Every structure is written in C-alpha cells, then in structure tokens.
Image 1 (cartoon, rainbow, N blue to C red):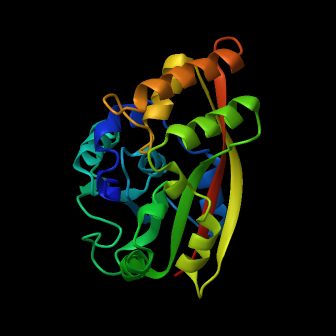
Image 2: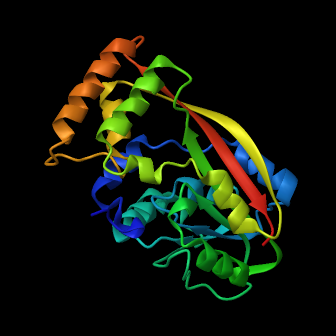
Length: 255
C-alpha cells in the first residue's frame, strides 16, 4: 500500500537533501518583476520539506513560515537553514497545505515547490485564500525532469516505469490540468526555466533513491533496479558523469 503523501519521504531524507535539484535564481527574479516580491514581504512556504526553496526566500530577505507536516523533513529543514535563522525570520510549523495553522490574512505570498500534486486541492486552495492578504500571490513550482531529450534520460525513464512502485500514478503529467483546477476561476501565468544536474554514479544512485517511488533496500525490486542503473550509467556516462535535465515550471496568480 502506498504511503500517505505526508509520510512518503521519511526514509529518504538524506538522499533528498544531497541529490535533489534546487531552483534557478530566475524564479525569484520573476517573482520580483511580475509579482512585486520585496524583502519586506512575509511568505508561507507550504510543504517546505528540507528547505530548498525556503532558503532562496530567506536569502532574499523575506520572513518565512515554513509549513511542513513530515517530522523528519521538517527537522532536516531546520538543521539545513540554521545559519539563516539568527534574526528569527524563519518560523517552522508542523502543518499541512490544508491546515497551515497560520492566521487569516497573515502572509503576502504562498509558495509550494515540488509539492502541490500531493495536496487536497480544493481544501488547500481555500486555506491559501484564507491566509493570504488581499491581492496576495500564490506561486506553485515544479522541477519537471525531462524524460526523452537524451539517450540517458530515455533509459532512466524506462527504468522508473519498470521498477518504480507507483511511478505511473504520481508523475507530473497532469500538472496543467491541476493548475487550471486550482486557480479557477481566476487565471494564472506560467514561466519555464531550464535546470541541469551532473552526477557520478554515487550521485545518480542517490538521485534515484531520493524519489518516493524508488524501491529501497529490502524491496524485491531494489537490487535489479540498481543493477539496471549501473548498466545505464556505464552506457551513457561521459567523463564519468551523466546529466539530468529539468524544466522548472512556475505558476503564479491570485486566488
């Protein structure tokens, strides 16, 4: 049985921290230009996880409520961001997208990076609308791994289709429909940026095992999956590295 969304990453936090991609700096440039993001704005970063996007907001000068339901991810986020907490601009909250624990009309922006596909969308939308100040912005972000632009990525995608526990069910093919449903009847804007990661074999394995649908050690599919990953890596590595490519999709609008 699949784990609940709030528990899916509890046993892979270390790999998530080390091997998941960050977000291009152009994302914050976009929010400054299109949404008027200022350092003085308060942001609720929902499903903040280990703090990957939260860090960018703190470095921009924003005060951030990092709302994360998974205790292991939340504790790692606090640890990862401790160097940026000296002026108390970060408040970590054990909450969910549907119940953030925040006051009504208390934030200028709500952000959710690599997370909204796990939400109960109608409840999350109502909660975001409640905590946003008038004319506040909602921003949903995904790093969408490209699946067919290189021979390595095509083989990697086939590996996930073969061995992923519920990969077909959770991949992001419905993102556009999800966004339309979430923002309606209001409109949203979309921008796309490019992002890349290069890994040796250890990093490639860590990137794979950071995904919630990759079977871990002890699962019958784990060993054959890792053998296939070694084969793929040897077939495609250049200078002992392979490259992951992403489209970073940013959707933003009012609710």
